Amino acid sequence: MNEKDARGSRAVQPPVGTGPAAMASRGLGVIVLLFSGSDGQRRDYVAVADWLFIAATGATLLAARARKSYEAARTDRTTTGYGHRFTTVLILVAAGYVIVGSVVSNPGNAIEGAALLAVGWPACAWWRRTATVRPA
Image 1: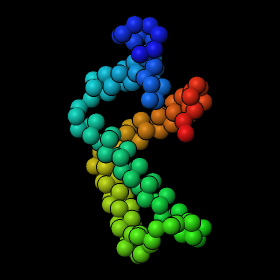
Image 2 (image 1 turned 60 degrees about the vertical axis):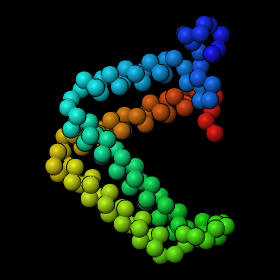
Image 3 (image 1 turned 180 degrees about the vertical axis):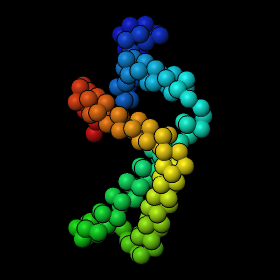
């Protein structure tokens, strides 16, 4: 704990520097999500956000591998074959299928899930800008 008492009213979590205000806002966000709708809606939100990140990761990997400087800088040659590219493209196709399927089957929940994800970007930028300890 930091300087106050054993309950840590002003304590900061040592490994990451998370303060009580951040933990309280996260708890409030969880409570809002808990009472905001059905379990199916929350699953739709999470599915869209997860598969958007999976697609972004796969696209980034393919873009990085397309650069010759990336291949030249690599020291291991375990994933340089065409099989790795094929499976990455397969994952991108699956992600597209799930995202399009979510939008077609329930467009409201899919758009709300993407909007919730988009709302997090300005909050993350604000917290990074105001952080006393800069992330590595």
